[in-house]
Image (tube, rainbow, N blue to C red; front, side, top):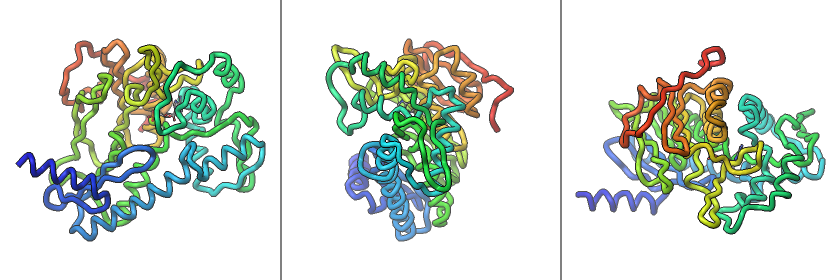
Length: 354
Ligand code: AMP
Ligand code: MG
């Protein structure tokens, strides 16, 4: 029997849009976009309805991928060219709204989530599908880019056109867009008549409804350096998102030192505080941005930043291995590998979100 299950899964992976039935009414699909595998489970009346919904979802993700990719030719690359040449660029209202949302999140994060640091990310070699090799970039070059102080707050919108007061701004929504995509993907499925679905973009998950009579159950990877083991599992309520950021999966390495893909915009160097941060909440984009910001934040500052970003529940696995988490997160988790050291952290009340 296990062999049969393996074959079924393999078939699902090989046939992205041929729906695989997991159990009565649950169909499974593997899509690829945003440089990651996207796993979709949806509950539908039958194969034809499920395939149609998955097809529409795939069309949306491919469109979004072309629009928002940071270095493959598309709309964002055109926007970045226009900014570098100090030219205005006309943008649609939804594009403006998305960039304004990213700007508000940058401000709320105190600049730790900064989607304007595209030049710095490119300098580190992270604008490539293959991981860069060799030593870190020259400190002088990093310093030059820090001095340019790019920020989303330097963007202005006038009469449907985007201007930047700083030509050094280069937008990279890698820390935010997966959350937006999962959120918009679930909204599309709902419009297509699907009431129960799970979308996991490389382990970052959002759900609507539930799986039959049970909630959707998901696992959080153990940031043990390879991402192979599982740390904890939990049930997600309808409408919840669970996003994890960490420097343990995508990094460059030289002389045995790993340089992760999440950069601290203050220093220009990879964040070193944490192995991973998992955030639970009800909005994909903000949760995604928050997970990245909290992976940059120092131990003393992260609770205030979480509160300012209206985050509800956080799990932070620090570089030394001990775990900090909010009481609400602790109540939701079933440990699969109980950490040695756990500290409960209550977020500041005043700014706490809904
Ligand atoms: P995530 O996996 O959501 O934490 O996003 C990581 C990606 O976001 C990286 O691969 C970069 O493209 C981008 N990024 C890295 N550091 C930052 C930062 N401090 N603020 C905004 N985006 C970042
Ligand atoms: Mg993120």
